[in-house]
Length: 249
Image (cartoon, rainbow, N blue to C red; front, side):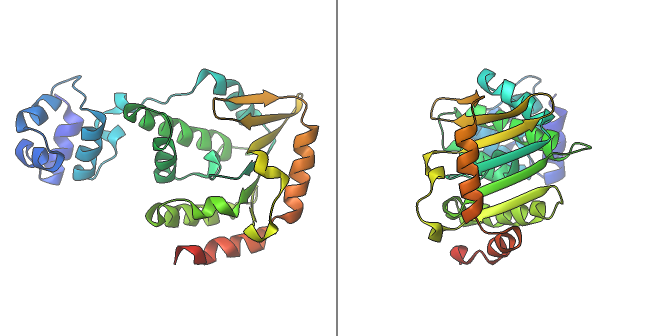
């Protein structure tokens, strides 16, 4: 049997009949989920996990295997080896700073199929741990356009902003908000990251609509980065702005 699901149902006081009512399926369907190897449809997994107060990966671990696009793997390797990362985001918050709920919302808004999202969310959380929680984490500097702070459901954004404030208090993490009053700026051309890697110098990463790419000629990125840092709020004022979050009231 799927003992993970069976135990979760018992602890939540749910029967096959009651869980079926929450999810909107026949009780026989829930009974089949208890069989080894039977994995529900993505929307049924989400509904069942919510009804039981569990994460999907706790009930069906094989359905949440981390997924990394082939084109992203070289950058993920560089990211783990970097001694410093400088990241600018204009539309969404940086992947390394996203909460699980925020990452799920962002990834669900794109071209991924519903049953792929959880795997990519798991990958994003693993990336964060590999970079930010390693024994000697890199210096990470984030410049975030204020427009990204306005985008998202308030119920998702409040804990996300709490997370930004908390992580910005780490000595090796600097978070800077680029205020709307700064007007037009060169970063509007798109997000990018500059990684400093011992032995390899500095390399850049640029996202587009199809995939990301690594670039070696990063003089234009450095020029843009210096301009963005010059108009972004200092670290302490950025933290105060994130704590105030007046736009969510």
